[in-house]
Image (cartoon, rainbow, N blue to C red; front, side, top):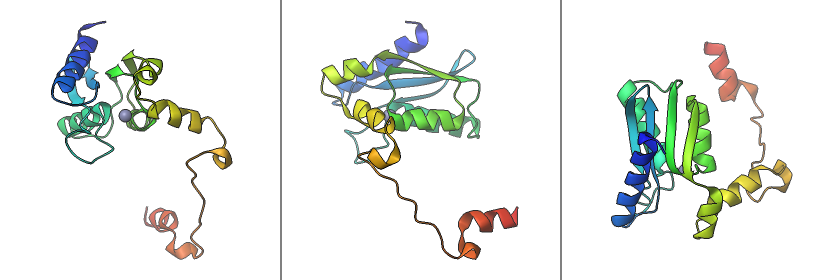
Length: 150
Ligand SMILES: [Zn+2]
């Protein structure tokens, strides 16, 4: 572990002591932490309250930009599919993790593994389905309207 992962693990251990789940994360740019977070699911009913997502939000607020290219995430636990997507969409360079998905499964935190497995399937075979329902009037299609304005 390096100093950044040590900080992520420390945050996770603090979160456990406060009644939360074992997840902490820090986002680093250069030699500076620009965002930190812990899993906050025990604090409020918000399923997006994951350590990595909160670290991303704080970093984007700090930088005043959604572009996080040139940053590296250190997460105490392997990121879930939601956080994977958020990091990829924001351009985070890479993520290191300490506890693996197998470690999470072993202690009853299996949701990430279930969703990653679902994503490996073709859409029609997934537990969670996304179904195309196109806008019939193209003049009312948000993509068309947006493209027409730009
Ligand atoms: Zn997550």
